[in-house]
Image (cartoon, rainbow, N blue to C red; front, side, top):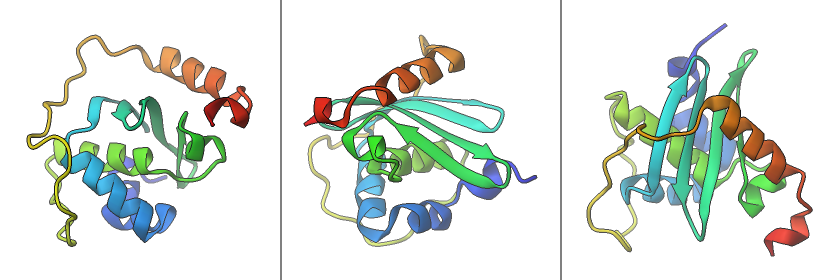
Length: 142
């Protein structure tokens, strides 16, 4: 079974999300919208700022990279912008080379935020939060 480093790559994130969602996720990562990030074995957890703060989990299950996010798109099971941003922020924190693809003009913040794990809830707490959000009807997010 492969680990996070083999599964979380710019190519894998783009394949799962599609080009448009990948570009938006890359913009989010570049803008410093991943405000919390932690790794626990085959799991990356974090908070990503979008129209709200979203709890995001990327993990390796078997030989596949899967993710959950409590955003409206994530509630449908889609691989969303926030999952891409979390994966790319994790790669940047791990010192992996950046994706050289074209960038959109920077909107919002001019400087990325420092990623820290201080005060981050435990993995089990985040999983419970994501499960609780996933039980909400999709209509709650509109």
